[in-house]
Length: 185
Ligand SMILES: [Mg+2]
Image (cartoon, rainbow, N blue to C red; front, top):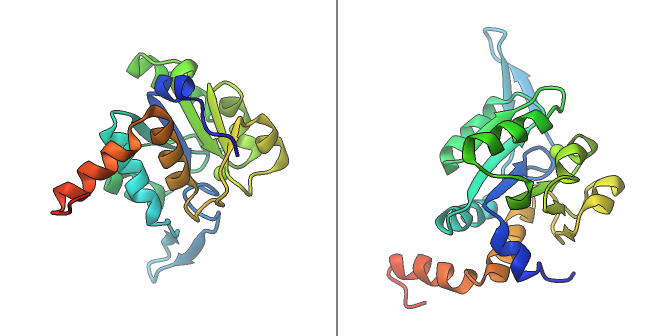
């Protein structure tokens, strides 16, 4: 896998994370409680967390964008200080256009990491389109960079590290993180 070009990495100000199949392995655990309410659980990979925080500390906006409404997504996004945007039925393009307008950003500042067909309208517009290792072939074909990790198995952490290394920020950010915790890194 080639490295993300530095000039491209330094233009990124918004990192869009698809949720199902990127932050998770795509599995959804559904049940009902005694009151008949639907309960949903997902497994989020914990190593992605530090990757997201490193991106935020580097000054990048990191958001979750999902084609499905999910309390589990909103809970995880809130925990990480990320915006969480939902476009039921997989309508994500309007969400991104709104986000760009709100933040004064454009596709030339946007990285997206995705896995499935609903992502193509945003993936094909972003300046840095990224596919997870197990993305569908159409998404892999549209991406300029692909993680070696699968969705829900550290793909977001891998992208965060590659992006920060390409920007020249990674060693500095890791050093700060370790020193803040009493280390000598
Ligand atoms: Mg997905």
